[in-house]
Image 1 (cartoon, one colour):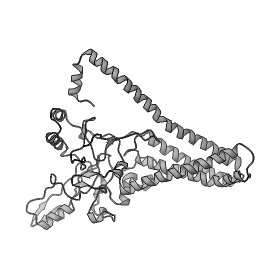
Image 2 (image 1 turned 90 degrees about the vertical axis):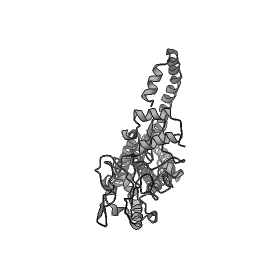
Image 3 (image 1 turned 135 degrees about the vertical axis):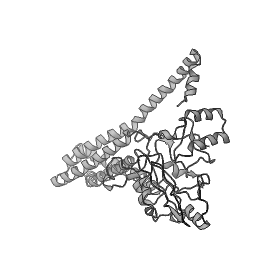
Image 4 (image 1 turned 30 degrees about the horizontal axis):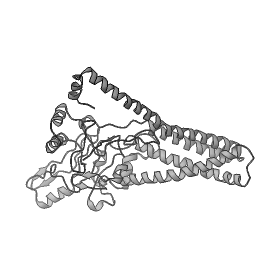
Length: 404
């Protein structure tokens, strides 16, 4: 997005320049339209395959080939349940819009003007540091700089990137639809496994000439092959994403560990298995199997406990003894906010030698997982580091390019 100053500058150009700019933009616009059309081809293929599998299983296998009425009823009920959940979760994955950073991450007009005038370097970073001092961001670029998007002209929230479209769903998979994507993988895997398991005996009959010589026998054969092959591929993909959820990682973080102020930490957002699971699926277990949004957080900020406190934000009240100073550093919690939740203290007030130091407050938006300090003493692989944190989604929809 161009700033106001840039927009005004383009209006002062000559008509021929504007005309040539529009001419150059037309091929790009056509290319984008063609890409959008091509992205729907995998979705259309999955839809056609799903429609054929419904006809082959419900019509040719259950109605035509099964002779036992009880077997027909049970198979049709279970099949339609899995079919409905498969389609529902797939639909939500495709048509749930990606999230965008909130307005607080956008620079003001004056800050944009300063960035345009200043060359890349220390001055540029100082402007970004001043703009980001009250924002809940804790990750940095590989060089330790503030993560900034030149295209959108905003400070990048933690774990946010310009997403790439997943060809299977023609959509970005991020914070807003990651739960739906996981359920889509789970129900599609169950769908294929159920078809393969109930079709196996008829598939064997096909090779032993135990089936009537009708067109149903060929549907039964291809149905088993398709279900078995998709079960193998889906099981590996679903298993990989289950591992990501258990470790509170996005796909990018699995290949490149996030960089915090104190350095790289591959488990910087991991809270332990149960809390990682709750961050994606929510606190109410009754909503876990349903493709309705129940994830925790706002997609722009994620609680974490830094191993080493940042000197820019660390402030220890004067008069504290070294022991209390060390205690406060070990128990300092990152003020990661979440929109719409009331402010809560991170640390309990400390009373020492008759002086009471106020607790460090969080901003208005705060994850409710931080409300119970004792719940963070979860047994996990990172307990020896004294970390606490919380994950947001795999990848919200926003991403930044050209990190340095």
